[in-house]
Amino acid sequence: MRRFDYSAPMSLREAGEILAAAPDSRPLAGGTDLLIQMKERGRRVPRVVALRRIPELRALTANGSLDIGAMVTCGEVAWSKAVHSGWPILTDSADLVGSIQVRNRATIAGNLCNAAPSADVSPSLIALGATAHIVGPFGERSVPLDQFFRGPGQTVLAKGEILARISAARPGAGTGGAYVRHVPRREMDIAVVGVAVQLKLASDGRTVQDARVVLSAVAPTPIRSAVAEKALIGSALGAEALARAGDGAAADARPISDVRSSADYRRELLKVYTRRVAQLAYERARSNAG
Ligand SMILES: Cc1cc2nc3c(=O)[nH]c(=O)nc-3n(C[C@H](O)[C@H](O)[C@H](O)COP(=O)(O)OP(=O)(O)OC[C@H]3O[C@@H](n4cnc5c(N)ncnc54)[C@H](O)[C@@H]3O)c2cc1C
Image (cartoon, rainbow, N blue to C red; front, side):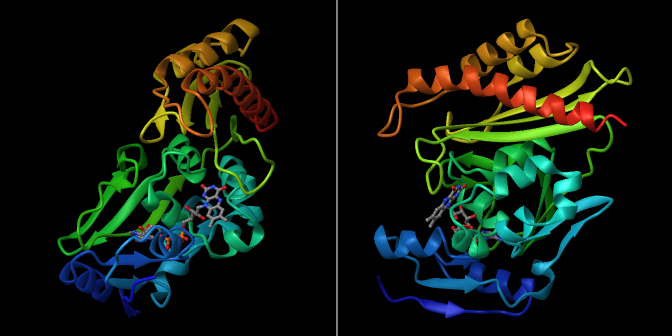
């Protein structure tokens, strides 16, 4: 591992100033991506700026709405009863990240900022309509999470900008969501495909009024499938609607072939997983219909 300088500022402002002034510097959260890239893949980072001493980044609020500070770990989210009761789709995602040890270090924000196409947290947060709140040298800005990703390892964050927190409204009664990924191994593996579905039912308690379907590991960034969403909306999730949703997700995907799967196999998996996850989200919405 190459030598690097280390700063641990106590405010967001100071962190932003250090990052903006030092070329190629990077924020450090849990380090489960960054330190491995530096140690094993030769990534050159002359200065890391640890975010761990900035108090406001540690807050997790899950009551009327969800607010996740940048240093909140996947474990804190996965094991929060309040998150599970209001945003179960996010529990599904956070609980899948690595092992217990990894989840104790890995942050939700780091998972987003690392921008791996196969990351497990981003699909669920996009399906929830979450917002990224960014602080930087030119002030603060908020970006809908479905516009946050630019490509593998790339986000809209500019030099000196820090993702300070992520927020999402409470979906409420008559809604349900789920995230499921396909991995050859049960644990400690990377998604071959991942599907997040968030549904809202109409007042009859059975017709889908709104749907968000988000796919991971099948494009350079997590993507929404407009065709799958259209197939689900207005249906009571019969076999025909589910089949059209699965086919729609496969059609909207832009998978590659790599060591873990061929593109064709990923498309086939998407058909199965989109149906399966939509069904699970629907069951959760029905039981939440009040
Ligand atoms: C053994 C192992 C298993 C894993 N399994 C999974 C898995 O199953 N699913 C999965 O999705 N991931 C998995 N990961 C990847 C990893 O744990 C996650 O991506 C993690 O959430 C990253 O968070 P972190 O806090 O460790 O980020 P870091 O490594 O500290 O940072 C990641 C990147 O984001 C930047 N960054 C971090 N925080 C901010 C911020 N607030 N603002 C701006 N930039 C920031 C850093 O500069 C860096 O470029 C695994 C990793 C390991 C080592």
